[in-house]
Amino acid sequence: MPEPAEVTTVACVGAGVIGGGWAAHFLARGYHVRAWDPAPGAGDRLRRLVDAAWPALTELGLAEGASPDNLTVLPALADAVADAGFVQESAPENLAVKRALLADIDAVAPPGVVVASSTSGFPMSDMQVDAARPGRLVVGHPFNPPYLIPLVEVVGGDKTEQWAVDWASTFYRHVGKSVITMDRELPGFIANRLQEALWREALHMVAAGEATVEQIDTAITEGPGLRWPVHGPCLTFHLAGGEGGMAHMLDHFGPSLKAPWTRLDAPELTRELRDGMVSGCESEADGRSIAELVAERDRAIIAVQRAVHASRGGQR
Image (tube, helix red, strand yellow):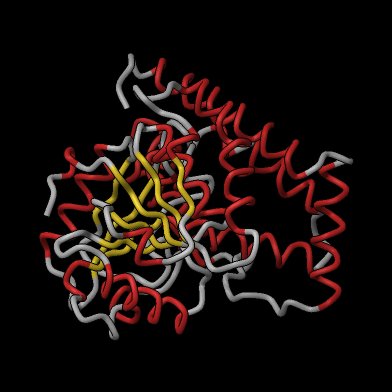
């Protein structure tokens, strides 16, 4: 088993949006990346994704020796993981696919190498059941795009050994990630549970004709979203209590916690709701392509991160 700081080559298994984002991040940190994806044309799509991300990564600052040329796309899974010191799996969110793929990776990856899954919802306990060496399998749940958003949630399954969780957490921190090492498995993990609650409420308002897609997005970007890069929801409400802090906020506003406006059950995804969300996003995009929106997002995220970093005196 290599030490986290000794790893020079990372295997990215799955080269979609998340897997490609991981590949771009590892390349920018100076690693050699060996990628595998069975989909036709996956290699070309991966290289386009890396090229699109590279200007933002260059602006953030590249590690010594970092280059898109350090990416190699291999035709066989075994070849991709053969020399890897770490494996990041990012296959589609299909439990059967995840189980089979993780078992295949485990069968061909060098002994002692940690294998992490980018799953956004499946517990590792459910995914590691077919692996011969499940002790080295962990969840490394990123956020899109992985090359810009620092958060990674790390947690093992019933058969994961603690050393693998500790190793993965250390490695992710070494490559510049902000890591939450979870104490236990939780469906949807932590951050997804929080953003999904907001997402369900948004869908309810659109479905009921109470708000448009653009109004909902503006409500966040011009409202609480401006506070969240600095303080999360808990400290935000702590400040809402004034000098009395969270205690005063709960005592004063506590009864509203069960107010009737909250509808956390998922709404029925009708054709009308689906079409309304699609047309609303197209209207808000106002002719901007996906590539243009990605570039706009990346520029803004970098600016926000730099501003918050500066406001904290250079401390994360």
